[in-house]
Amino acid sequence: MQRLLRKKANSIFTPSYIYDKSLIVNNLSFLQRKFAPCNADIFFAVKANTSLSVLKIIKELGAGAEVVSQGEVFISLKAGFKPEKILYNNIARKEEEVLYAIKRGVLYFNFESVDQAILLERCAKKIRRKIKVFVRINLGIFPDTHPHLSTGSPRSKFGITFDELKNNMSIIKKFKFAKLIGIHSHIGSQILKPAPFVKGVKKVEEVLVFLKREGFDITHLNLGGGFGVPYHPDEKQLDFKPIVNAYKNLYKKYGVKIFLEPGRFIVANAGFILTRVISVKQRNGIPLYIVDAGMTENPRPALYEAYHHINLLFGKKGRKFKVRVAGPLCENSDEFGVYHLPELKIGDLLLIHNCGAYTRTMASNYNGRLLPPEYLFDGKFRIIREKQRFENLIENEKY
Image 1 (cartoon, rainbow, N blue to C red):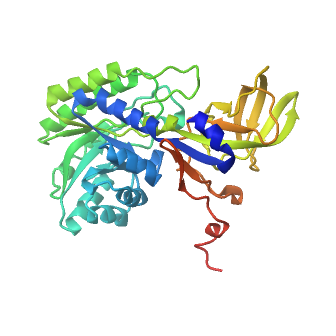
Image 2 (cartoon, rainbow, N blue to C red; image 1 turned 120 degrees about the horizontal axis):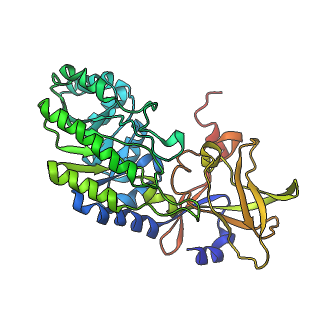
Image 3 (cartoon, one colour; image 1 turned 180 degrees about the vertical axis):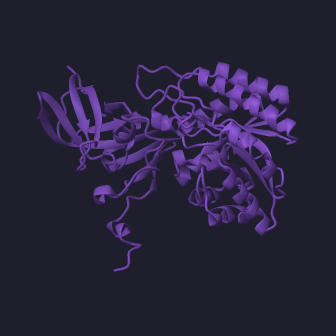
C-alpha cells in the first residue's frame, strides 16, 4: 500500500485516514480460523470504527456487530448487519434506547446492574416481544494494561459483582420477556498476555455453574474481546494458543455457544493517518515537528499516553535524530511523542500507524477543526468519506 501511496500522495488531502482492506480481511479471518474449534461467533466492536465502508467489509466476512448505543444500532443496520446479528451491550441505557433497538429486531442485550435488567424486562413486555439477555459479571481481574482500559478490575464501573447477582436471583427468575441465556465478561482492552483471559474463563465457569444450579438454561457465553495489538515495534504479538485452549475446553465441557467481540484487533493495524509537517521548531536542542494531524484525529496519545509508530513516507538516507512530533492544537497534550527520524522540512509527509481503531470514532471538532476525509485502499485508493464542511460545524444550531 505504501508504495502506491507514494505515487498518489499529492492527490490525497492531509490529514486523512487511510484503511487497507486486505489487513482488515486478514485480521478477521485469522480470528475466525483460530476460534473455529471453540464454536465461536465473532461480533465486531463497532465503537472501534464506525466507517460504513469498514463495517461492510466486516459484515461480508460473516461477522456480527457489537454495539453500545442507539446510534451504533442505527449505523450497523445501515451497514447491512441483520438485527439478529447485533449484540447491544451497555453499562446503562434509557427506556427509549432499549425500545428503539427492540423495535428494530435486535435480540441480544446485556445488563450490568439489577435496575438495568428490570428495564430490559419492562421494555420487552411493553411491546410484547421476547429478547435474550446476558448478565455482565465484573470478574475482578486487573490485566496488564492502561487503568482506563481495565474494565474488569474490582474498581471498574463495569459489570455486576457475583454477590450482587446472587442476592437478586428472585427478581431475575420472575422475568417473562427478557430471558437470561448467557454470561457476559470483558476484562479490558489492549491485553498482550494470555494469562488474564485464561483466568477469566475460570471465573466465568464459576458463575455458569451457579446459574445452572439456580435453574437457568445458560446456552451462551460472551467472553468479550480485548485482544491486544503491538503498537510499538518492540512489543510482541499476543499468544492465542492458551486462550483458544481455555475457550475450547469451556465449550466442550458445557456445550455452550461462545460469542467474542473484538474491535481493535480487526482494524487497528489496518488504519493509518497521512499527515504533513507544517512547522519546525527547536526545544532544548531537540527538533520539534508540528504536523497537521493532532488529537482531534487521534486522541489516544493524549488520553492514554499511547504510542503510535511514525515513519517518513518518502524515505531519506542518512542519520536519524531524536525528535518530537506534535499536533497543531492549542493543547499541551497534543503531542504524539519522541521518535528517531531523519531531518525533516515543511511539506514532508508522515504516516502514523495503527490508527484504525478508536481514532475516527473518538475524533472531534475541538478548536473548530473539520473531520478529515477517509480513503480505502483495495488495490486502488478511493474516498469513502468526504472532508467535513465548515457548515457542518453549525448545521444543528438555531441562530
